[in-house]
Image (cartoon, rainbow, N blue to C red; front, side, top):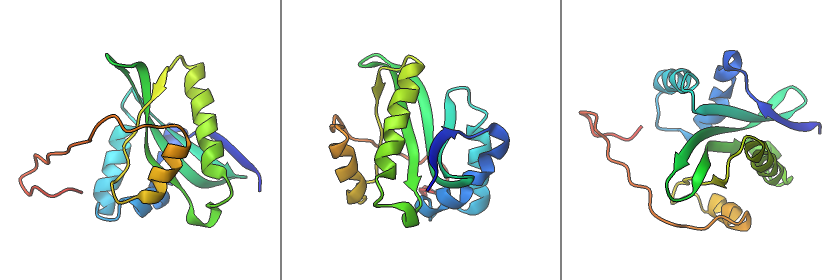
Length: 148
């Protein structure tokens, strides 16, 4: 394996869709694609990837902000490592890279959300030193009131 990490170029952003669809199983493909294209235009969003050679095997969005309670923070979002690569410590390597990468940009903290049913991610984040400080609430404002 030739594992390395880097920012994904804006022009290559749609390359994340196959991995992203694995964790967004209820979001229709066309909506997911449109959202990704809109996200990449946001000045506080960046997508980073884990590569084995030229093959994209992991992704994480990074949302940058400043919070009154913690300072300059970054939120990893839609984090996934291809299932065929799991169990090789790649997630830990990816997060170590994210820590150093965002620290080099002056960020002081990382906060994230994970689905309540994703117990493997909970264990991973606990082992990484994350603590639960609150709940994440969602209210859908669309007419269909459906989460997708």
